[in-house]
Amino acid sequence: MTPRSRHLLHEIVEAYIHTGEPVASRAVAGNQRLSGASIRNIMADLDEQGYLSQPHTSAGRVPTEKAFRSYVESLSLRRLAAAEIERLRFEFGRLDTVEERVERTSRMLTEMTHGVGIAAAIPKASPALDRIELIALPDRRVLMVVVTRDHQVRNRVVGLEEPVSSAELDSIRNYINHNFTGWSLEDVRTELAERLHHASATYDAILRKLTVLYAKGLLDLPAAPEVHMEGASNLVGIDLHLTKEKLRELFRTLEEKKRVLELLDRFLENPAGGIGVHVGLGELHPSMGELSLIGLPVTLAGGISAVIAVLGPMRMNYVRVMSAVQHVGQAFRDA
Image (cartoon, rainbow, N blue to C red; front, top):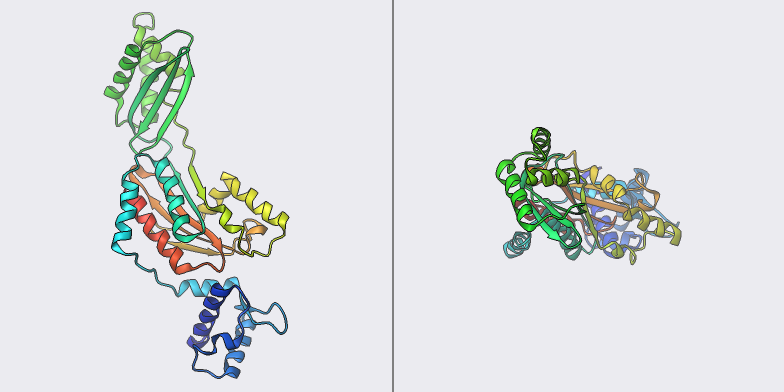
């Protein structure tokens, strides 16, 4: 494209984002130093090159995925006000766990963009242990809490054959925390299994009960991704040219954590902090052909890989959404 054609194309894309209607030559004539005939000729050329389509003979043109990609490449990010950035950091600073931050991130993105806010944290297979907590519950049950250095928190309630006192649980907790804080969970499990194997269970009641808790999965921390999505209902009021059945398919797709992770996975190959835009998602699912995804990979403390993203219509406000993703991602990382 010539610079003149590119400029006109981007004017057409912005007009379509604003109205959602096919764009006629007269709709962009006021912003161009060109005659109506020249504009129509350029639009015809852009049509032939695959940047525009014409739904009806007498209608204006609609930008294609190719046109939106060209438009996105021309954009620069808008800086948020310093007060807004500080507010984002304050919001995250009040949250202690990765799970809380993931949930808050998706909600922030939805509030700022009116799209579908998505956030996921993909933990390391064996993070470092920070501490454990053991709490006695009624009916010979114990709440086992494992906290890792990368702010993951996992808990599990288990039932025991024998009663265990709070004092015994405190002794077990102190033994684990004193000996293994800072170790990777995999190394803790290996070393603890070795120690318990050589210990005399009949000799030490505490070790015997530690053996029971260990067998109940005391230090088993599943490395499942933490995924949260907010604002899917925002897609209902958008004309995505879908039948009711296709719209239901879209929502069923978004309800599957595996599908959402497939969406976000395309950003994990980007360098951390590098924002990416995918226009048109039809290859992932036919119902997503008129949607775009803007995402950012982030590396958190402790080596956790995270991705935050906004899913919205192809004719979303890209400048606003890209800026929101960039700044929320920065606050999420720095918290």
